Image (tube, rainbow, N blue to C red; front, side, top):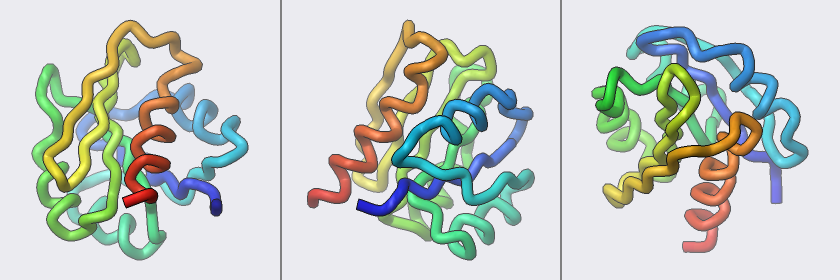
Amino acid sequence: MDKIRVLLANHPVMLPDAIRRLVEDQDDMEVVGDCRGPMKILQETGRLSADAVILAREQEEDPGLCSQLLAVYPDLVILSVTPDLTSVATLRLSSHRQEFADLHREDIVQPLRAAIRTGSQH
């Protein structure tokens, strides 16, 4: 399978460089871009043919942009990450949200990989 194409969407807060390094360190993933702002994120997701978008979670809520992204890109997987990197969730159009907590920082991309691999088998 081709590499998982990941867009780092720094909205509303900057995701740490640690996330970029974690994705770049994965043999089956590549960072295809980094952008900020809802319209830019919507545009770049399609232009870069991203398989996944990583967004910073706003407090305890997933970013409102998630529903727009999934409406436009139904095969997209969104990884919603808390700013302190202690909790992530994957979101898909099927309204399937799975929460992962107490992950080691190095394992934060594992839910993304699982969601992409599972979704591609449908």
